[in-house]
Amino acid sequence: MKKARVVSILFLVVLLAVAVIAEAQQAKVPRIAFLAGGSRSADSRLLETFWQRMKEIGYIEGKNIAAEYRFAEGVPERLPNLAAELVRLM
Image 1 (spheres, helix red, strand yellow):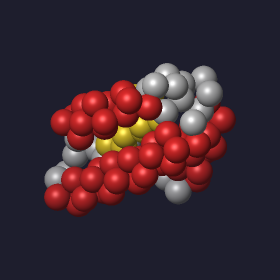
Image 2 (cartoon, one colour):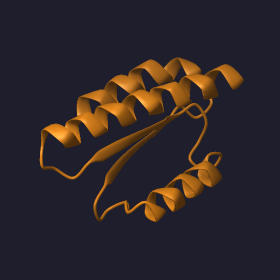
Image 3 (cartoon, one colour):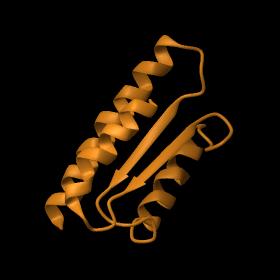
Image 4 (tube, helix red, strand yellow):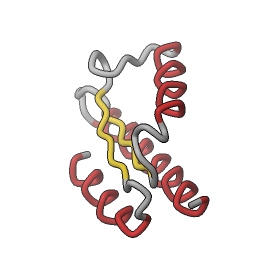
């Protein structure tokens, strides 16, 4: 499961970079994608901490930044398809 978490974090970093680049190119609300190997409930503390920090630097989900979430629910084989789905949305 540790490998899936590392892969999830790497996908998150890549997708965040895509969102930042897209924001710089367009005057749209920036979008961020979360991809995790576990479940939303398992990663709730991580997400809560992330959004708390984002709020501190001026980003509030639903107000000036949008978010898409995908969770593999403990099935790492789902990660590539979920990542592709998120990239299409970005």
